[in-house]
Image 1 (cartoon, rainbow, N blue to C red):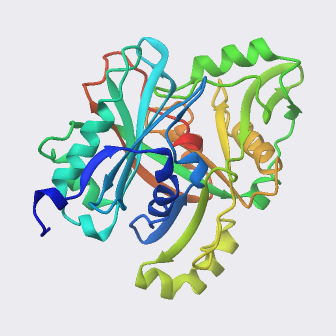
Image 2 (cartoon, one colour; image 1 turned 30 degrees about the horizontal axis):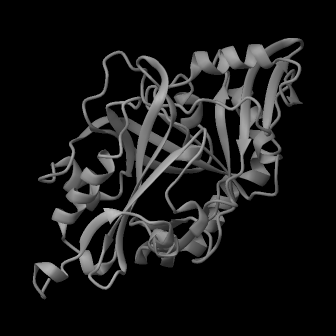
Amino acid sequence: MSGGPAQAPRVALALPGDAAAIAALLATPLPGALRLVLAAPAAACAPHEDAGVRHHAVVVRSAAGAVLGHGARTVRRLRGAAGWGWTGYLHGLRRSDDLAGDGRRLAAALHELQATRRDDECAHDLTAILSANRRARRVLEGGLPGAPAYRHLGDYRTVVLVAAGAARWQAAGITLRAGLAHAADAVRAMVAEQAGGYALAADFAAAGWWTAWRGERLVGAVRAVDRRAEQVAAVDGYATGLGLARPLLNVALRFAGRPTLPAPGADLGLIYAAHLTVPDADPNVVRTLLAAVARASDARRVVWGLGAGHALRTALMRLPGWNLDSRLYAVGGPPSAGAPAASPEAAWL
């Protein structure tokens, strides 16, 4: 860039007044054959902290004060090798075209985010990159000078289901019960036992819980998480070939009971299956719990995700939905030995 060092963009911690500009950057489509937009309202973009979340943000600011780039580090209580503790998740890396190819400031932004780590937090952060985002993978996996190291933890699959179809799933002999008043302690123990590495600590006082039963035996649990008020997921568009083939593909997808490809600009209308737990990995119980999530709201699509080593991964891989593949990383210090296979909650990625 021209203008001399005094006019060069600079990396700084975000201020509350940056929230609207950050929200505009987050509306930038993600690369891939299907270009998704995962946007957030301005109120969720400003740095903030409460009992369950510590949200830090950095920006790249022009000499005139415009926000040209953004990155966030959100810290929550996740499951690690030593049990439940505070772990950061890096996300929302976006830049304007003014910063194209500016790896030095990307490294500085990542370093600034790492500096927000507190003494009671895990020595490394977690992040995910879509497998199709080869440009970001090439830059960060290869080691950007001055940036923290990205160490591959494992692969992750997110499945997106048609809510109307999933709502009809029901297996003989399995019944559903809303809430946890009848089995709170048993559900708490069950969820903690099957939680994967980097799973979010469950809020058992929250709404949206369902349990599955065979007679009087508890066989599974799930929580429906509706984030539509705090995150907009929409389709920006498609790669040329996929866009041209979309009408014919949609005929085949409808016949197969899979989600169709919406028109560009369509809101996906997502609800998430969180803390889905089935101790014996019975796929019929899994589908019944996903049906409960599908019926929990007017959302059009149900989302569930798992890491490659999770006990329910086989059941997830057999579901009729869109499959979005990601790679999970430990960023900064090396991951602790003995941690369970990485499988964070898709609702919070």
